[in-house]
Image (cartoon, rainbow, N blue to C red; front, top):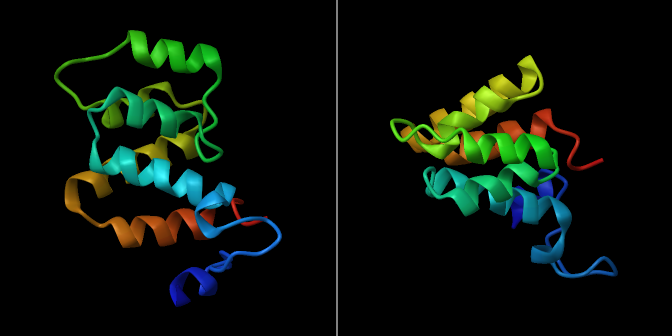
Length: 117
């Protein structure tokens, strides 16, 4: 709870609702599911639609249709990124999935995104 508060994430229930109902927490949960299940279409597609990745309907459809069975779904996100910054972010998330550096990934995503603004 203290780490969440240091990151600026409200860690108690307040007028905005409970901690797990906060938009930032829902987005980070989607990241964690994609990292934990990198070849699960639902988990990766759900992450692709969250505030961090922001895939459009057409981008998501292209991602789903272009599945390469030699790669995980998560590793293929970078191929459908709209910018170099997204390619870097998706590559970093995929690397964290393979190496288990999840806490470092979450810290980096929170520091480099506008999820808290």
